[in-house]
Image (cartoon, rainbow, N blue to C red; front, side):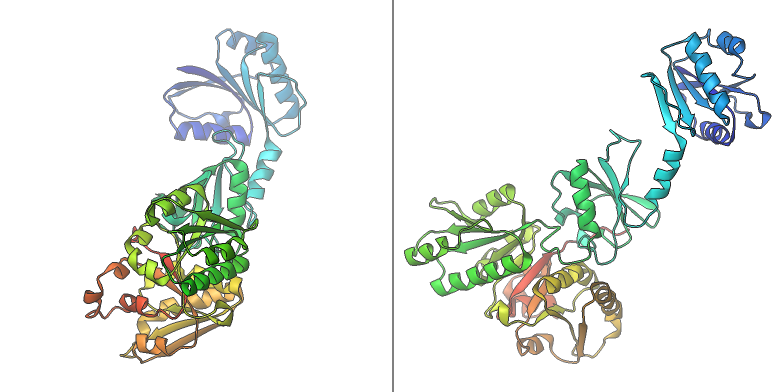
Length: 468
């Protein structure tokens, strides 16, 4: 047990003693010296002694008993300096914690001087909107722990924690509705959540900026780069089409394109492909017998991949594996991306629509596309989707983009097949993993997303969520 002496006077000292009373610290024994009766209370765990600590004789007598730590919390500048000097006359090495609002200049390695004005100013500064809040008295106190408020429209909002690429930082917990929730991979980050993140200070600064920016960051926070798998067992026309779509997305998203070839052949196409190699396009050729899954997994561990681009046949063949990656998947379409004018979101489950909503606007921002929200219902029941429509309208206001809501009593699949070319952003849910035979009897629109092959599609990972 450590014996701690508190030399107290003033409002701050009174508040400090109240904290000692409320928070019982059984491993410490406290002795409080006071000369203002308002500071004394009936706490049996604290020894109260009344005298003026500026009196050297009286303080020296008390200090004949050894204390491990001494707290000096005085209301008067002259008293504070006199008390400090008295302590040092008696014991030059005892550890002192001094509350200082006057700016003393004291060279003492065994003194911890807490600048009261700076502490108050720091706390006031922390209340300014859009300023990172660091844990100043926890850990190293150098900013390795930070809390960040997630604004509406952030690229982090409506993302699963497990889908956020956490390199050199960790989302440890979040605060929602005045409750602390420990982070879980299947928990969705929502606007107005406060994230508690831990990592290197410089990394946390970058994460803070990424969270606070509104839109236009895709493929973040899933990762940074675009990854393309070119299976040369496909026709040259299919390979060239996927390559051009990947290059278009790379330029629009302003990121790097990593191209991995599988089943290397087609010398003419290979020579054409090599001409694209540059600082923003990296080529990797596999001449071994590695499977596509092995190559993808190796590259995911090597690169900071945020979007996987793949052709239609490979998507349908490996859909279960692609679902397990927890990454957005781009499935190539039949149209030139430069000919497309609109991003499309197709109404499905409310939770899934929230998950993809931010990505819809991110992609629209990057590709400079309009945004259409399609709500086709054969029975004409649109009341159940009002919340989703309002959610998309709120995001449209945040991003400053025009949103067109299309609500019609039509068969959704037939209606969408007849639509002009558009860029579809869809939830990558487990429904897509069902066998084709079972889908013939389904009434869930998500079961028919794969039939819309002519439109380019990005599938956003979704999982069963944890409810709070």
